[in-house]
Image 1 (tube, protein in one colour):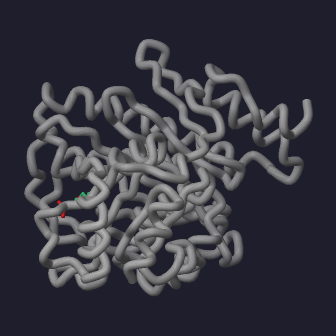
Image 2 (cartoon, protein in one colour):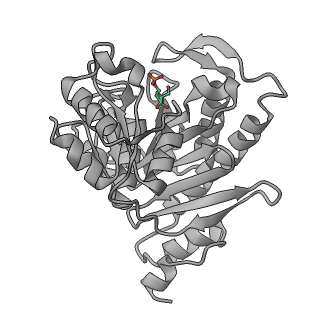
Image 3 (tube, helix red, strand yellow):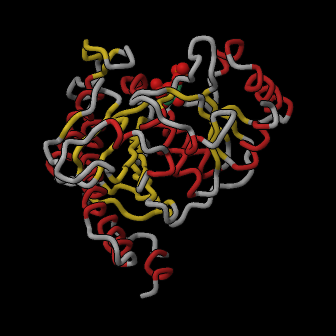
Length: 330
Ligand code: P6P
């Protein structure tokens, strides 16, 4: 089977078989990344079950504590954080993790793990108790510090173009896992009755144009002027405003249908609200691989230089031609 045949697999193949076939198409692959992707998918299945049960077992309310963002931690946030950290620790392929829910690096005690992971275990958590779609966003790097040593900040400060894989899980009307390893973007839909993810969209190619814009217009007066000017442009073109308030849900719809998501810098968020390492970089990688684009208004998001773990960034992502139109306003 040629690499092209291997990579162009039929819809309906399971995630596990897809990962195996992709690995076989890359002789240098030794299986650790494949196993890491399986570990993430397993945690996603567990969170999917928790999200589906949330209304029944009272784990949707605020947990009382606050995360590094100063946001009330919803119980599902905490559950998701624990589940992903446990899956990554038990999987053995990861030596360290940064997560939105923890201030500092979390070490897995697997110092022989080749990879580090940056993750937002459950983004959009303010939507949890009103049954709106929420998501997990993850980014994977090969560590740069010596295997066997303790991971350091340097392993997480490699920059967006050093990601070896990135993806998201969207817990919505159906639960999907979307990821890239730099060879295109594929979508897997979860079949609850079988406990399996099945390939449902092969090699996504995002429309170059769109007529959907996603932004919280309530903050319009607070946005940087270039963003305000572009939003007026959207009004004049009679684009459809679609804003779920859950980044993964807005991103995924725009990726498939065409559109642009905007979270500009503002007086309230002078560096932007979204987090570079576990929200902007992974979605920017997926956008790039699907023929879409991203920017902070001044450069491709993947080229932003990371300085700290929970660094914020302005984030504009979506159809290539819409992002290019936006840049004309900066
Ligand atoms: P706002 C959720 O908190 C989140 O990080 C994204 O999922 C979402 O797009 C955005 O923030 C919503 O922020 O300020 O519009 O409520």
